[in-house]
Image: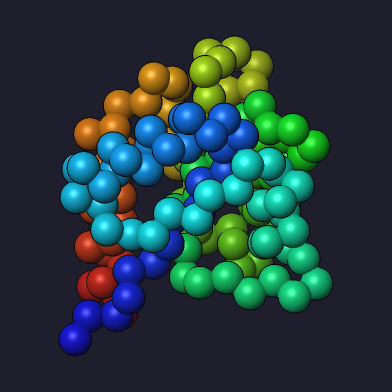
Length: 137
């Protein structure tokens, strides 16, 4: 019997973008649960709060322009966290700002997706990560 699939953490403040991503991933056969947080503050509380307890995570998708804690600050906190830093992180944004891209590169991440997102490419990444997870389990 296969272990349960690890979840995908989606941190996106625009509800329509989050729902579109979820629907496209479902349509493309992604079966991982998607945990959606609409702000950096809510995501940080989930990840770093006093009683933080989260399921195994396959991938963290972070929008750069978040209210409260920005995506860059959240990316930095995740990169410094012993348990979270090994989890692949991908940036999703509508900006192609070179300075922000370079800052994200210096912090560390596995990809930079500019909206509109290529959902077929993202689904392929998720399928590959899921296969790697299942082989290690």
